[in-house]
Length: 192
Image 1 (cartoon, rainbow, N blue to C red):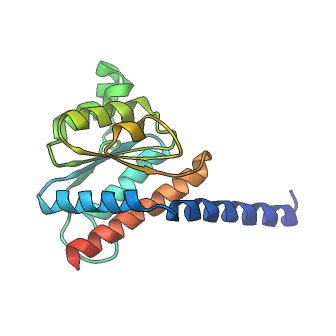
Image 2 (cartoon, rainbow, N blue to C red):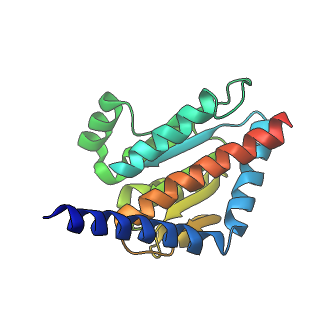
């Protein structure tokens, strides 16, 4: 590949990412609802449980780190747990219950009514994310699904944050932006 071809490809990819973000900016109602739900949960002493697979697991961990640590301003730590981080739990549950139950079992252990359960899946169809959202609904958690264009997770969750794209990299890029927006808005509301 020549330098000119690389340059053209890089510019095209950046334009595609900008277009995906622009489509997301056309309807931010779900971000507003998600912000309100997280603010209410944290004000009431509840916690955030976040989960996903692969890059979505990394996004869940990143989001939780921003809540427990800080995003932009110094503040008290907020209770949040990424359910994809404990390899002993994941492998024990995967072995004993099946991989589709690794997050649901943790929701059963840690989730309480009024907590937030945020499932992240670019396809919206990851079986373990679906089972965890179902478990969370049964336990009275406020469920949120961060997905791409389609999938069952958006139908299961009370709040669906959907990215109007089918390409995993573009979906993941908008996901991290949406998670950052949630952090920023929650910090502003709780520390304003």
